[in-house]
Image 1 (cartoon, rainbow, N blue to C red):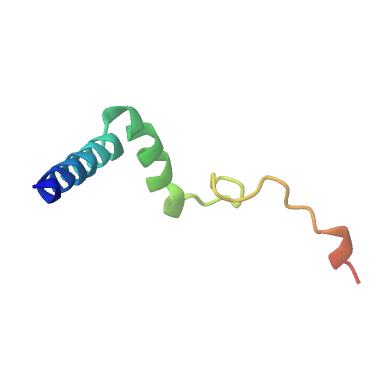
Image 2: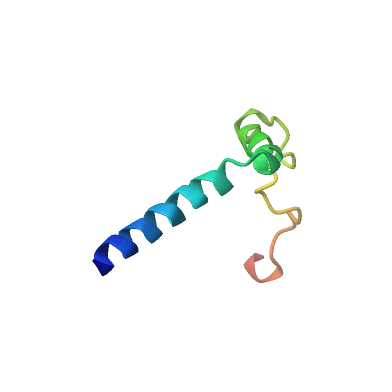
Amino acid sequence: MSHGFITAFLLAAFIGGIFWLFAVRRAADFDRLARIPLDDEPGDSPLEPLNNTPNAEASP
């Protein structure tokens, strides 16, 4: 009997997670991340670090 409650809880948590993942308020994040492969300039990607200066320790 308790297994049924656990299964129902996990199913509800899964459906809630899917709903949260695809909620309308996250659409802007998905749109921004979807444009990453189309960015031509090196600094256009939101995943690239903004500081492109070489590390002082890496200099020979």
